[in-house]
Image (cartoon, rainbow, N blue to C red; front, side, top):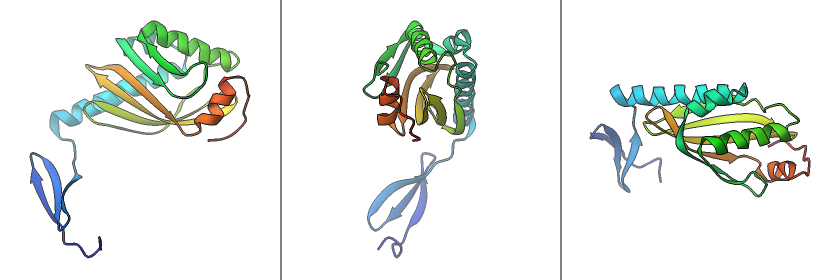
Length: 171
């Protein structure tokens, strides 16, 4: 059983590994030095972006994303698909604001974590009457967001509401 297995920790190239009867696997890794600084910098970029979006400051939000940004929006609703570039991002946010009756859904951050390349933020916001909770993955390079993948907790309710169904469910 897993509990009775004998494990030995060892470090290889700065990564902690567990050696056990069932083989070797990554166990734990803590960012250090420059890697930790880049990860923290990426979090600052994403937090600034989330803040700008919540204030509907699209000029600032656009400055924080790369020219060739790609945002992958899941679901089966009029907003689903790939949003490309800064103009596409601004158009998507204007559409979101229109769906929300003229007010931009203000994202609330629940948690955020980062590596050298990616930031994951747990967010909630209300879109078209639906409490939309999501884990959003951001790819950050050179202090610019280059790609985004929102993963909605209750995609079906959000699809229905954004498509005009007006669902009032919580995710």
